[in-house]
Image (cartoon, rainbow, N blue to C red; front, side, top):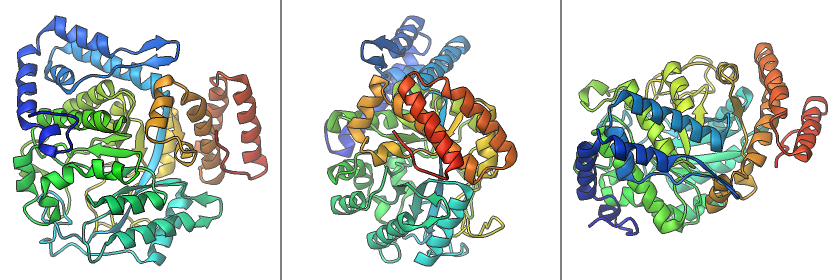
Length: 480
């Protein structure tokens, strides 16, 4: 029985409902009248309170995903771009992953950290090594991290994660500091989520991997992650533990993509129905080659075109969510999907434990091959040359604009009064402290241009003053 308000995984992610959805989508994939009505429903509308988007249900979005009519796909792409601009403007948030430990007791068949892999080098960072990693990341210019760890209650208990978070926040090196730590660790208890919240984390991220329960059990044959229900219900426990912002994601390539797409949107609908706020972010990783893992062993891989379509339809269906793409994807793919809805990208990433402190990129502890191996400076410059503003802003989290408070500001359009100025000021910090001369020249030009796009004259005046103090007085961390 499908029930988005249920707290039982099998009821809010209903296999029967997903199959009925896919059948409905197949029946209507050429129904122009229905497709046009779905697209019309999703269009942004101006109201007295700002721009409003209704989003789409999992069933409506699945009809669009099934549609193969070229001109309708182009309409979807244009709409996704329109929605992206309405709520996120031309800002792209920058972050980096930090791998703390690759010790893991699970038997996940698609991950090189699986406990049977005897030739991967196992490593767990000491607090001194965490410090070295964070300084290396700060010296690149990063302000926002997503910490990652395998599941191992002996080597990676919650106390270790909390200690690492404390260490990360404590390090102030030159003008560098990590202002937001997002956490991507295994499903845990309400009590442990409460501890994470108290430690000052930003978003709690957990990839479902696959919503297809039968496949999930086969792909996770051993270890605590084998428990599909416990894993799928993790976000409800996180929110019960006080974490306002949670991030969803599936690993595309493990199961049929249309099934995963429907399940992902149902999970978003469930969070909205139960907690009054949907996912803060949705990630869209694809299965990639890694030590002991060959993606060709999995027969559900998706093309770049299908991947782009999925990204566009997530933006249309869940218009207010942040969308994340990592360095798993190539520069070419990232360039395409940023336009279609992605709002956060990683830069200069290393997916190995202790990788940032090494001069040469190590491969012996990597979780997956990195397709985009450019430096952070190169990524920042690339984004600006495409007309985007790389943002290192973490103000909403530190000003308490999280959960439903963030979403209400986003839906009303008021978030623009904070995010655009904050993006420009944090970009200026990066340019002053870390950028190459060419990147600095490009950045200064885009900042001067973008100042004129701040609609509120008072805010514009404050931003100009703050930018001068960043440049001339070495002051940092202004925020609205």
